[in-house]
Amino acid sequence: MSAAPFTPGKLVWNDSLKLGVPEIDEQHALLFGMMNRLLDHPESLAYDELIVDILTDLGKFLILHFQTEEAMMRKLGMPPEEYEQHVHAHNIIIDEYAELNLAAARGKHHTAAEIFAMVKQWVSDHLHASDAKIRNYVPVPSPD
Ligand SMILES: [Fe+2]
Image (tube, rainbow, N blue to C red; front, side):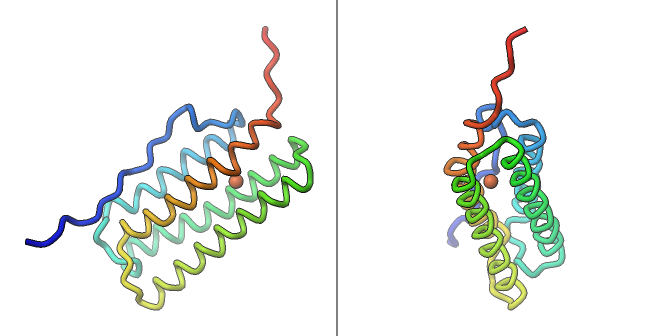
């Protein structure tokens, strides 16, 4: 009897993850949805056309999202040192992501489920360790 296939759980967006910046919150929810697409084909391999398409879309979206988030942090007046640390964390994710895509192109046998698990780890860690700090700079709405 073979072992059950490795199937991690999909990412579930909920209000507790919101930072209070609608543009960023919407992008985070979209990002979860794009990542979850990988689990629609958990056993497909990284270099299968279907998965390459998802990974390409995801890569483009990650870059757009990081640019949006960095512009927002500057607008919110985050101190330069904290801003630089956050940008550095984004750049590490982009590097790791590029590495993963390179491995896929070289025919390394990662399944979509394994890729999902890796990206999920990076994104969840980043949301909790870095993005959560953006909340400190979001103006509190005045009560009407
Ligand atoms: Fe971020």
